[in-house]
Length: 227
Image (cartoon, rainbow, N blue to C red; front, side, top):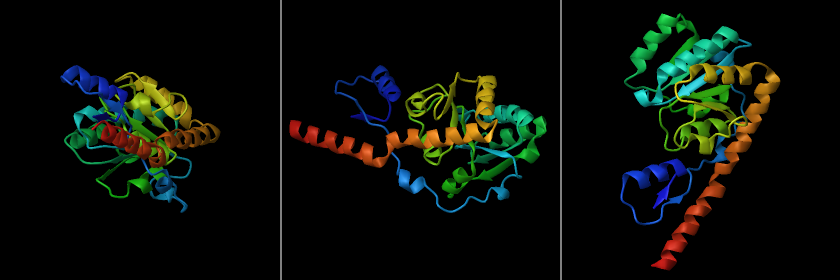
C-alpha cells in the first residue's frame, strides 16, 4: 500500500486497521511541461505594475475561499494587485458576495472552470491555498513548477510540499493576518518576487516524474520478489 504523504499515511494508520506496510511515495509532475517559452499576456488580467494572486480549487468549504479573499483584501491595501479565482463549487456565490461586501469586486476575476490552468499560472505571481486539509497539495506543486510561490496552511501534506521560507510560506489554519504578511513580503519588490519564483521551481524539482516514477517501479519489483 502506498500513500502520497507522511501525513496521509499517519491518518490512514490511525483510522484503519492496517497490518501491511504503508510506503510513502509522493505525487509527481512533468516539470518540463510546466516550462513555458511563450510570453504570458498579463495585460489581459491586470494593469501594468499590479501583482496577480491566484487560487484554483473546487470551491468547497474545506478550501476556505473566504480566507483567500480576506488575505487578498489585506494584500491589495498594501500592494496594487488583482485576484484570479479559478473553479466552480458550492462556495462560489458566497465568495462573490464577500467581494462585493469588501468593495473589491472590481479587483477579482471569477473565471469558472478552466482547461488552461498552465496559462493562468504563467500569469501568476502568488498562489493562495489556505485549506483546512490537503492529503498532498498537488495544486501547490503545480503552482511551484510554474514558478509561482505558495502561501498555504500548515496542514496535511502541505508542509511536505512547500519549503517554508523558500518556495513560499506556511501559516496556522485561519491565520489570515500571517498569510497576508507573508504574501506582502514576497510581493513587495521585484527582486524578492523573482527570488521566490526561482526557488519555487527549484523546490518543485523534488517531485519531477523522473525522480518519483522509479520509486513506484522499485516498489513493484520488491513486492513481486516477495510473492
